[in-house]
Length: 505
Ligand code: NDP
Image (cartoon, rainbow, N blue to C red; front, side, top):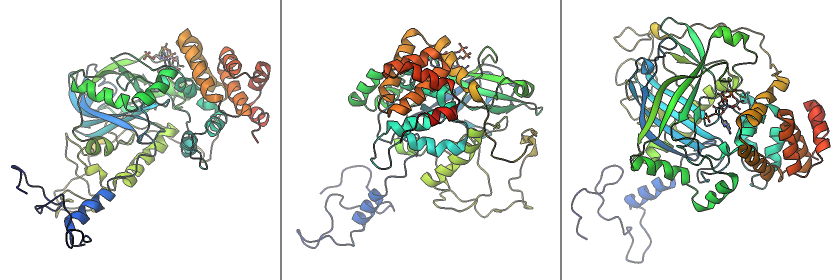
């Protein structure tokens, strides 16, 4: 066969390949010879194409773009990427569903991941949030259990309404997020038509070392658009990749999605006196208490060239900070600070930070970390690999230190004693924010799912909706055909009494 004009196909090691259609055999019908190294290499690499999928947020889509500062926040943070109105920083964003496997449908009812990597001159800052301002749990010790209940039954490998609602009804602090999840915001129409929230509280600190607590809100400029429950169900069959497709096609046609970044800022003094724990991720800071301030806008304007290299290998961590931004005592955040780097080391290897999508772009990485699997840069060359050293090599800069923060207390497994305040914001959302149509869809969506759980769980969970708002609980109970008085009685009990009154065995 004649060679086609142009580039020559090679093996992974650069040797020209003479034939990529016919294996090396002993005679035309004979067995294949092991010395066909091109075949061996090709098969062996194919066998290893899959890397572990993310245990959560496995199905996702991403795009490149920029962040531009539109509001002066230098009073609050020294972060250089926020230092000047008009300043632009390159970003990469990834959106995802949470519980589903890599091949699952984009229209599933689920929170959506909303992760942004800012390639700043002080290193990469990651904002790893969701399209919801709150979360189901506030202690990371509960996270693996919670996720197990959202995935498949260990015996049947089926989604299981009993495990789903058993855990949630035993975890009353989830009621706010459950109310958002079962509203139509639980099935966004596209990734472009949803907001993104840091959900956690973070620290911002300025050049004088003064700090504040902040929550970030990325508000979609495309407008909020959601599927109704039946539309989302239908879309699972029609186009399981609808949101991935929408993002790619919008950017390809030049219709670049934009989000406005707003920040809520609380002083340490306000936080100390606030009427509930401002670091509790099951609660928002009401806008009337802490009005949002405009910071900037994010524009996504370039599709990835290669999905695996840029989206699958993208590794975000809420622990990737830059000077001016830091963690808060939010317990769930503290657990995530550990988990993200840990999972990427498992998924991608110890040198995952060197992959082009994860490496800093606006500054040079210069650390004394060396070796490890797949080290593919010069590994620090012949320079020193230890600190302190007496050479003209990289040295820590004390001027970048975050402010000292006072933490103290008895080391113990302290139980969170928030009580009925956990129901207040779910009730406010149901009563004061939702429209009649929102409420109608919410009830239909809950009833359509909760009816698949056993009857005691239906009663236990309906009582929690009742505690958020009596009408809310009553409508769910009626939709499920439950005895409304029984649910009202359950709502009046303590959580321990309620659980004891609704055994499921
Ligand atoms: P506000 O009236 O000032 O804010 C209400 C917020 O609710 C807006 O940000 C709006 O977002 C959002 N929203 C509107 N419809 C829905 C819906 N169907 N599902 C979820 N969110 C919706 O009130 P408060 O700040 O006092 O908050 C009241 C309740 O609103 C909270 O308990 C919480 O459930 C919800 N909420 C509050 C947020 C906050 O940070 N304070 C953020 C998001 C929700 P948009 O403008 O994008 O429509």
